[in-house]
Amino acid sequence: MIKPDAVANGSIGGILKMINEAGFRIVAMKYTKLSAEAAGSFYEVHKERPFYGELVDYMSSGPIVAAILEKENAVADFRKLIGATDPTKAEEGTIRKIYAKSIAANAVHGSDSDENAEIEGNFYFSGLERF
Ligand code: IDP
Ligand code: MG
Image (cartoon, rainbow, N blue to C red; front, side, top):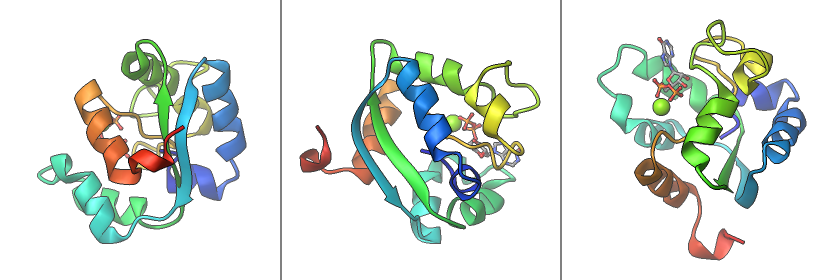
């Protein structure tokens, strides 16, 4: 996902360029907006964490870009491309280092396992929306 802060400040193109240049294939993509309920459900695994309410408010605050990306070793390679959750700790040249504003508004989401990538892909896309 490209998160609301990055969409709002015109970073969609720059982020997609980095994703393309890193060798990911786009299987599905959409520009959409999460309701608070949908954001709460997407981030259900974090519901006990202190920032959950803030995260749900933020993720439903404006449009996002959702995509399914394909590549050999995609989960690990995408986490490497986006960098650490906290942009002040992200490596130079990573998407979050370049585009993220804060630990909460950190520009992009990446799945943390193949299993969650499957779940999160199904959250946004039906089979007919994948190419
Ligand atoms: P990740 O996105 O790097 O996998 P997670 O720990 O899974 O990081 O947290 C999910 C999202 O919750 C983060 O991307 C960020 O938007 C938000 N978040 C994480 N830690 C904090 C925090 O300490 N304060 C506010 N928001 C946070
Ligand atoms: Mg995570």
